[in-house]
Image (cartoon, rainbow, N blue to C red):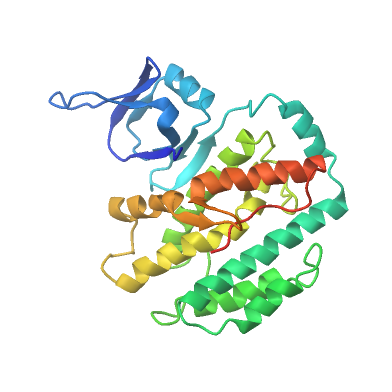
Length: 299
């Protein structure tokens, strides 16, 4: 089942009644609305005048809903996830914690291979020369000691928007960096949600290990999914119909639709949010020793 993503950009009061999310508005002429909580996958709270009851938060978390909080500039800054990801969670935590360094390096190799391949597919579809990136994808070794990820990123970012601008990828850089930042923040939250639902700790990464980062594993696993955001941002830039200097509601709504974009696995096609759960479940099997391969989609 495809879970819904709800974004609240205006003042509202959110509560819980009979397994329903109840949405009340400050305007007296607006009637309350309800949404089945079991249908929700992501709840995005943008407006600073949104009030949510504790009972509502508890009900959302019981249904594995990722609750994302935004700051005054409407950028995602916080994430609430359930603590209980499954009946075998303690066992899966142990497998994850005890994962060997050689296994982590092999998993990172697969991650970077697929990331570079998906970046190459984006440029290939847009008509750029990408023979070098396909070669780099195949050449990645365990742990990526040759830093093919960095080489590919340098070529990728100087190329992707070159028809429209001279672009440098930087979080604090000029647009469309703001669109990429927003898309990646949403993607990161969805990955963290999928990791928890698969009984894994999103804090313990296979490559990222910053002690101040609570979502190291999410940052690892989202890498091959980033090009899906990039392609959507490219389309917005190429159309030239939107002012991208500031994130407006229309742009944010459009970027949120990436969660419903179809992604292709070797044996099936599924919406990105569903595919993410398939990826994290395969990662759990790798930690358990049942499998040696993470199931990532191809763009």
